[in-house]
Length: 485
Image (cartoon, rainbow, N blue to C red; front, side, top):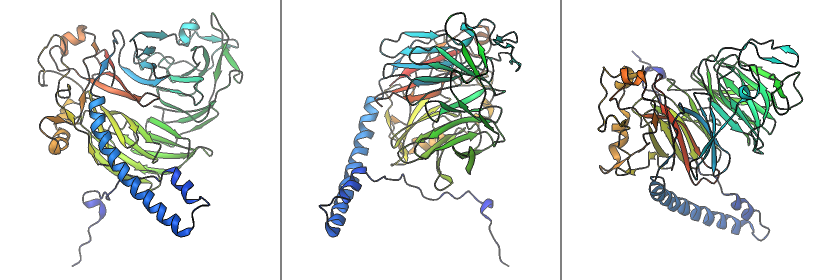
């Protein structure tokens, strides 16, 4: 009798994968030099590669040592009054703009901690965001949905840094375009019927977006291209624009998207368990990559040097190589199943922000997390002032709707810490942030160990600092956190 073992009957096969090493651009110049003949060219190329490999190994060890010492000094910012920072992007090395669940658009000066709230379109146009909003051509044809408290979930600055797109929570499904640096409203994009989770610029005036309505849309941004306009109390009129192209290729929410300028393609992440790579010109998916870990897939990052995508899920990070059309590597997160909420690449190091308030750094070349001294608040809990000592979670403390599920998969930290010395750990713990101690907190969360999920991670333009922001993972708690390493 012959027994055949089908691939899906056992553990999924994951081939051995190593982080690719790109050829430095100056090698090609050296090899094409007229001074080199064939033999000398091959010999010189070999010496350059040998020197490069040695240099890369030395640099990797140096970065691993220095990174742990340079990023452990966290500077926390005052975020009192803001509810959950969901999105952020840098305007310059000194200023970062944040979007919150309470629909606030805030510019933060990281040098002095001062912040300025930017008025959205509803502040310029009375009645905008309600069914009574009117334009120059009368009552809006599209019924505006009521505010469901979704807030600002995404934002992006165009390549020339002259425009910023913000996916706002009111009206639901709208995207507002502002001029930079003045933040003067330019246009409102209408077409999505539900929360906009992601926006990405393809060029200075072409934007793509993905939303909870499962659609991906393309927009042309031109102040005079609209047929309808809003008339603010002061300032020029604001265009109302519709999408030029719309596609529904996913069977779930489109949670994140990125545009690859070098390859002219768009990557979209959905809750249907797929990453799709789109041909930007045809606006059609060319590659469909099924994910192995599909629970709570909500964030996407791109390594533009090696063209690799990272996807965060409930307890894992998956790496997708679009050239192979598959997941090439996976590793566990450090948040015990509380979810990977944000990702950010810095060359071969991937920063991972989780629902438990931990920021970890995965060395792609070494295939492991960087170790951090435990003395740098990496092990400390986020206790509220009313509970000076951390309390363990219990059934009487409903920290989140998924507590029971998460308590059963608390295996990540044990495996991750197995190869790390006892006086070191694999993550940095964020600060306490601000928490509103209202009736909900007093009734259900008082004395509980409340932590801030890291919803956004962004390196500044000079790559000299990392901005992290978020808030309590629990739906009914109001609070926020923002800090920089």
